[in-house]
Image (cartoon, rainbow, N blue to C red; front, side, top):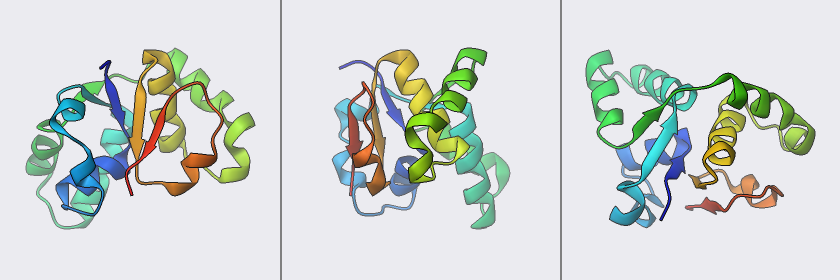
Length: 127
């Protein structure tokens, strides 16, 4: 398996032991990466839940490898608005997809509406 790109929602599902997290097998998690944009999103959500910033960051990086957000990914994320605009995807969502496109990797999310996306990457909705 190539790298597996996790959306912020998938990372949070693991941390909070939510439904769907069990589908992220060891095989997937051994290859798991996330965009630094999505890591910022996870960090913010954990802080809002009362996590201490250092613990939040460490817990997240224990799950995935950080992939720096590149100018090319920024361009792709902005351009994806053409194909995804009607679904209301956030910048974080499009940044996750841009990383998966750049890596030609599978992407994992809890966002059900991603099933409707017509992109040239495998999208796995985990719940």
